[in-house]
Length: 130
Image (cartoon, rainbow, N blue to C red; front, side, top):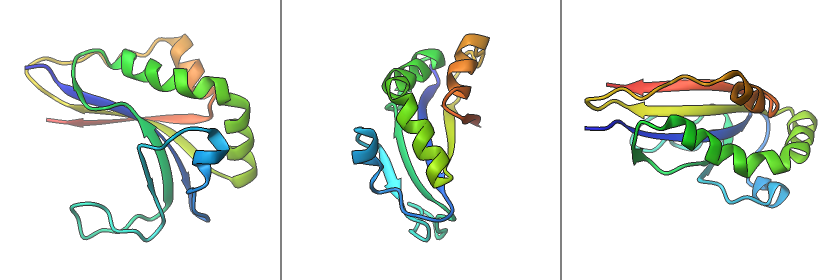
């Protein structure tokens, strides 16, 4: 069975709500939460506010296609993103979530793709579940 995977790009803030990023970026979020909100299916609460867009979970080995789908939505807004991140002191990250199956997806990201992610000021996080 193929692994299930998806990719999210997330903005986080220790200080403020990010509910307005929809209108600032002209994008609809996959998820948005405020610091102190309960985390679904746990007794924990979010330690930071967040706003994310992402791909849908899919059975595939093609992680790069999911990353490119996110970048295609964000790179045209790179100047706005840079300004918002700087003026509001936000952090950004690209989360690659992989739920392993019988086969292993490639987690190789070539240098030009890493540069495109870095140009958005984002860290890269891999969450791999067996």
